[in-house]
Length: 362
Ligand SMILES: Nc1ncnc2c1ncn2[C@@H]1O[C@H](COP(=O)(O)OP(=O)(O)OP(=O)(O)O)[C@@H](O)[C@H]1O
Image (tube, rainbow, N blue to C red):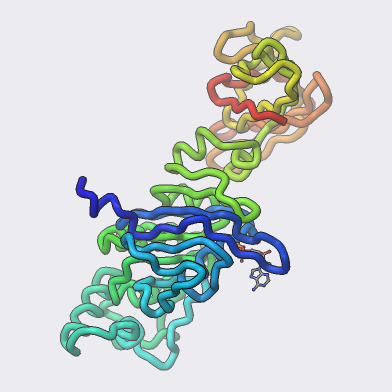
């Protein structure tokens, strides 16, 4: 790969922004290549939109730098104005111009080229988003999903180097959303745009991202491919952001944490450290009670603990069963594929897959 290809399309270095004395964006460094989608994922108020606005140039950072294709675009002294950053924007309330036709909406940001070239670009994009038949319609004649696709075509028309998207699909109903997400992703890849997409929905990030940047309280707490972020979370909150969790508390002795489910390895953790052992409901295994006995211990699943069904609910592709555990009366969640709805009060034995547990300092 050449040095040129190694240069990120978009790079932020140590961005910081305060509001009312609070560090709302705290040392955010990101780098995104052409054709790559990075999702900035985090709970409401963690600073995602502020980060995006600084990159767009509509908000000024207190410190830190923004680089595009290896060129400085903005630090605290030098600043390229927003309209010269070659950045496309797409937000939830994407507001098409109601008095302009679909064609004129898409052509709106096209400054360069002859009339014929502009028309060709508009037709190319509208064909691509399957709306060429609506080229002379007005926004009010289109459905929400169609308007969204026009907005995408409009944002992409000037061939921006970077696309910033802030919860762009949250205004769409569930049925439409998946299709439009997939179509949007395909088009962004074809155009080789670097994309920074802000979302608070883990499913959206998993579906769209080449890389997830998990943000909390202004900071990037973890960056990586969706699979890595999901399977090797940085901390308890990172696990909990993606799924329901179960947590066991234990104290480490001799690199082992003793629990009602047997011992868990805690390599490198000093003696006497309190740890949280965290696992997802889908990694709990259930066994029926056989005359007051559960399954025998195994190396991969440890010791079985006895629980009593508190309630069970069918969720569509799986069932969620909650147990009141004998060992301390706490609740523990398990999911089972398809339909499994045991009666409340039923005794079962639970084991936990060792290779799917995370041990974090408490
Ligand atoms: N102009 C402003 N003045 C004061 N506080 C602000 C301003 N803009 C944002 N904030 C605060 O900064 C914090 C981060 O806001 P931001 O919009 O970046 O978060 P977010 O992660 O995008 O959240 P959401 O998903 O809810 O939009 C919030 O607490 C918000 O109230």
